[in-house]
Length: 405
Image 1 (cartoon, rainbow, N blue to C red):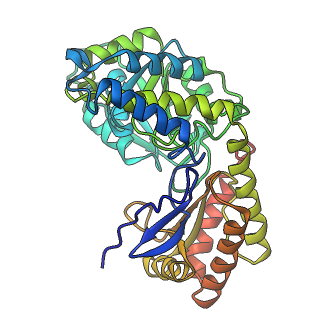
Image 2 (tube, one colour):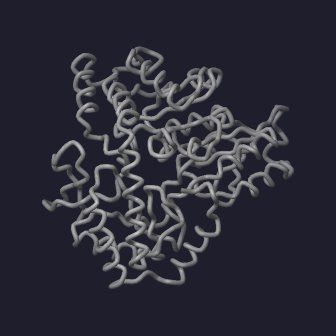
Image 3 (spheres, rainbow, N blue to C red):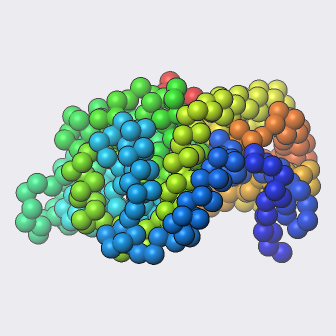
């Protein structure tokens, strides 16, 4: 039987859901800062809806783009240190636009092997030559840039200005680890390529002021040609954006099909997202809290022998090997009042099915401690398939580098 979670209205920062009448603690969402029901964000949505209505009514280039969109784009550009930003209705659409804006037939698009599905689709739809480099391996990406382009499919293409893109997530959504963005930037600069980073899960959470993976790793904004971010994770609302140079944004406005041929984000959501951005800066304790809760979990889980990945971001994968092992552990946690989804192939590679545990500033220490105890019990009663799980964890540990949290 399918289970459909509902939110119980237990308060503006509730981290709970109701599933089939049971109140459960949600440890698999992406509301990292607990802003999705913050009073100021909700008030901004209500006020803007009262003024502008519920829908935008058209695409951006017709009549759908308004002052709320403009204000949010300016705020986002300033936040990430870019000349301009452009709003999209979803992160998927933003990634399609970002890659297609810079790549076409005859160009090479190098993707991290664990990139989000939207980036893979973007590379395929761009018409460029898709190549995948081993996860978080900047050296391999550099070597691929050095290699000959090959003959097909570019021999018949008349263009002489073929380019190459390196495309990566910032914070990887299933492993919780970080891309070596500084090293990728060096490779891009050395070989005349351009670097695109989708920092959907890092923005708002990582870095001294929440500006994401680049800030955390000390990478200057100008070294990354294109930055993609979403508003439905740390900022608790909806939508996405692409940030970069003025020339890039003008190119997207004129050519990005996923921008031109779709209804604009509602004005009210743009206003709510801007309020969430302001709250995230004003209430920096939220970022500090989610990282502290993550550290608390890792300390407790390690003491109880839970197999942990090297990363200390709010995304904590517990790799169990088979789909059956992951589903069994998820069911056991459900019995303990904890909602943790089992992630299975093809979302993750074969033999790396896992529990994907995520933390929010809305969680309490008691809830985290309860998760640790229940997880340890669940794994003791139904242990992971040791060979598969340990192999996957060994790979994670082997590619760990000082840039990771």
